[in-house]
Image (tube, rainbow, N blue to C red):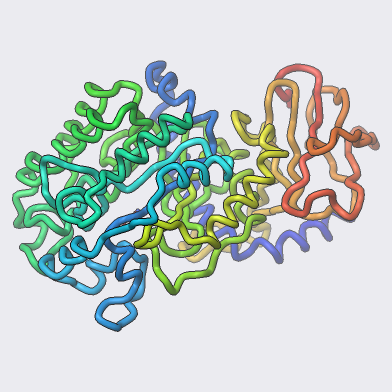
Length: 466
Ligand code: FHN
C-alpha cells in the first residue's frame, strides 16, 4: 500500500476520534513540565500503579434506585447526578435510604469479576456528591449502616473480600460537593449558594473526619480518588494531603484533589493523543453513565475496551473502567460479559499490558493535519490512527495489531537489530523482512485475533535506540 493510500484510509477513520484527544494532551504535557525533578517517595508509592494498568471503578449509591427516572419522568444526564439534575430536595432524596436494601450484594463476586476482567485494583464511591456514605460512618448517620434496612457496611465487606483475594482497593471520596449538607458545595436548591456557605464547617465536621475513618478502619487503602475540587483552596486541599500522608503514607492521591496529587487524572473518558512520562489515569464509562441508569444499555464492546486499554498503556497511562451496580447489588450482566471477554483477551496477551512501558516510537498515534485543519476548540487537528499500538519491556516490543494490514507492517526506524518475532498467543514465528534499510513483518490473513493480535519483536539491547 502506498503511503498516500495509507494516509487517506487512516484519515477517514480518525477524523472524529481525534479532536478531544488532542485537547486533553496539551494540559497534560504542560503540567508534566512542572514535575521535571522526580520525587523518589512518590515514585515508590506509584510502583504498583505503574505496573497495574487496569482498574475497576464502581459508582454505587442511592441513585441506583431511581436509575435515571424521578416521579415518572426521565431525567437526562449521568445517573448519579439525578438529585442535582432534578433539584430533588434533601428531605425527599434521603428517603431513598429507607429503600436501599441490596440483598444480592456479594463483595466476593465483585472482586471475582474484577479478577476475571484482568483488573488489578478497584476504586469504589465511598461517598459521592449526594453525600451518602457506603460505609458505617460515625461522623454522619447518612450512611448505609445507620440509614438503610440493609445495615451492612458495604465498604468493609468489599475491603475484606479484596484483602482475601489480593486485590488493591481505593476509595472515591467527593471532598467538596456534598448536596446533603447545608455547607457542602453544590446544593443551591435547598441551601445557600456556595459563596455564602461556611464550607470549612462542612470540611471540619464531615469531609476530613470521614476521610480519616476510611484511612483508619478499612485496611490498606491503595488510593483516594478525590473529585470535582470546587472551593478547594490550596490550604484546604493540603489538609487532605496531610491526613492521607500521615495515616497511610503509601496511599496514592489522584489528580482531582485541588492540589498536586501522585498522578494526573485526565478528563472523563479522555485519552491523550501522545505518550506522557508522568503517571496518569483515564477514568472511563463502559456505557455513558457512571451510576446505574436503566435506559443506558449502550455498552462498549470488548474490542473497544481492549483497544482503549492498549492505547492508554502505550501512552504510559492507566485505564480505570467503571461499572454501575443496580439497586439490588448486581452489576448489570451485559457489562460483566464485556469485562470478562476483554479479560479473556488479557489472559492470553497480558504480557503486552501489565508493567509494560509506553511506546518508544509514537508515530503510530497519527499525524497533524497536513492541511492545517483545526478541531472544534480551534487547536490544530490531530488525525489519530488505530492500526496498531506498541508497548515495550526490556528487549521486547509488543505490536498489538487492531486493523488487519493488507501490506507488510514496517517497523519504525531504530538502530537495534531484530533478533526474532513471534505471535504472543501461540509462539509461532513471524518473519522479518528487510528492504531499503526498513524492516517489516507480514501478518497472515485472516488476522489471528480481531480484538488485537500481539506480535512480539525481540531486539538487541534493553531499549530502543533511534
Ligand atoms: O461529577 C463526577 C461524576 O459523577 C463522576 O463521578 C466522574 C468520574 O470521573 N467524576 C465527576 C465528573 O468529572
